[in-house]
Image 1: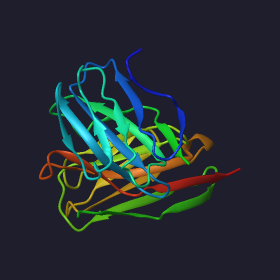
Image 2: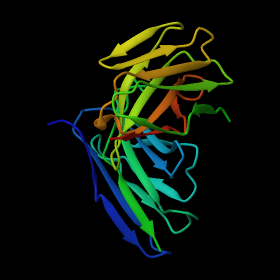
Image 3: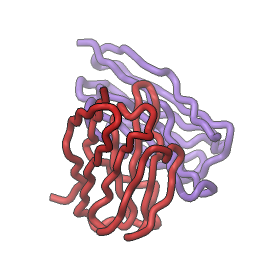
Image 4: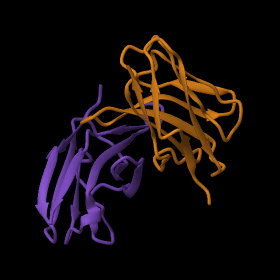
Length: 113
Length: 112
């Protein structure tokens, strides 16, 4: 079955540690995205990538980093510089030229204490 | 920055009732989207609207793209328990690097 997988579903870290969230897709989509969701808020774009080895900052990129070494994979690192990292993180992908039709993964809930 | 205003923030309805929610913007957008997010999952695209005035249905869901291109509404008829979740409106912002801008969502609760 084609789709987007995010792992793990729940992640717990101590403050000051970097943590990497996984996102893999087998839809053969060129574009991939990372969003952050906080309670009562819409989705906010962290980073996106339209092609391998290239990515752009979204609206709230500070304290995050990404890489896009393979078409299928777009991992997100939450660094210790992120002031408020506890949130629900969603990865999405789309076909180039159809950015409005984004397919989302099941999300990773990160809790930092 | 550009914002979408969704209302209401939350709704409590009886099973079987019809539901209506809407979304407005101060800017014009040419593509409006409605997503649904089940608890603990990622959002799923329900309906995409591409033409001002367009009315589109998907089963019990009906959405309209406002004629001014600054608003949209979503109706759900004869609600059932699996309709519970958060409904997000979104717009496709071609003037902002082809990004999607999301509203804050309407959380739907269904009473038995």
